[in-house]
Length: 375
Ligand code: EPS
Image (cartoon, rainbow, N blue to C red):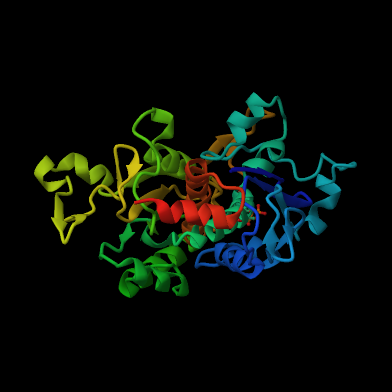
């Protein structure tokens, strides 16, 4: 399975191509659109989300709601393009408008203009923008449908917003409720404090990041491999999550905490009862030796604060070389709920690729039979 995306933030549309799906897999467009709407939701979002109403348009690879086994291409239109056509149109545009030269610290602007020999950071930010994550969510929502055919489910919640933490333990089933909360936080007291903090940061022209937790249930053991570094499941999943805009760290299971504890308080002891092997805990987060071990996969990702601050950080104008403050376009204050959805979807894509590489199978029945036969 292979997934490619294209599209600029204020261009005509975002486009995705998902190759390698088996045939005869049901595709539920409503579920894709549900995930797209969830990505747009959450407390702390900015003005752009009032313009966009993301909906997937499937262009190929599906007939009568079933995959054909051919590349599945789809698009999500940018409604904002109507306001940007004169600046962005591929067939001719006024590129003297909407120039961005006051490069933003923490964004791709400065390194991008140097690397791609541009004088206008718009030619960089349009692609570096987190708008691209809409198409990754649509692709991930399709990958989730593949995994769900095998009984593999993905869920998650927000754990921390700019230092306000929810440290409680939740079962996988409890996580489903998180998406009904304004900040996807299950601890209502922490969520209230986080919302107050977002209000305060907004008033200051500031932004917030946070930590999300995403878990996978129902994945059998043995996915990924201990035989070659590039095939290790933790490396693949963490690499995929790190590829999301603004992600600065990923943990598996206990993560960094494992380094602070002795071995006896980290490694999950193994037991057997009624001929069934199980572990007494899941500090490994479901992955040992680069392979799934049959327990829940537990990942946490840290998102840095959004780098477009209304109050503008110190920078230079790249063209004049003069010190100035960074461009402050309209911006989200926090996009941590979007981040949670995106991490789920990116994990779904990466995992579907690993699962399909092991199982193969040209049609969904064949794939299911092969999965069911695994121990
Ligand atoms: C983004 C800047 C903002 C966000 C955008 C990501 O866009 P604009 O400059 O148009 O206001 O709203 O995110 C989305 C549009 C989206 O759908 O998530 C950035 O610079 O990364």
